[in-house]
Length: 75
Image 1 (tube, rainbow, N blue to C red):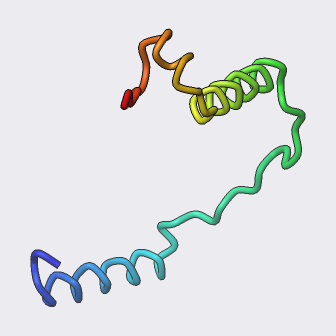
Image 2: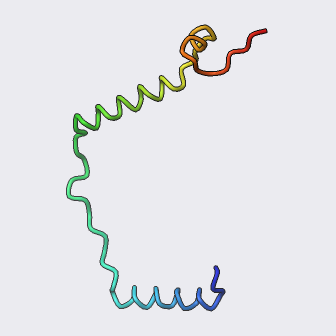
Image 3: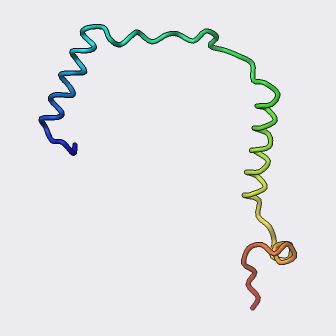
């Protein structure tokens, strides 16, 4: 976009020429499409879910004031 329509034509022509010459190799398939999830990944996901729940868990005012987190309104 910064170089204008001339650059678009040149890059498009170059791309199609190289594709036509076979420079790009076909995509290789995966060796193993389905693998079991390792224990370290399960542990990591478990910790991430625990932290997300802990972060989003509502805390009442007395506990928040005791922990020193959040804004406690006193009227």
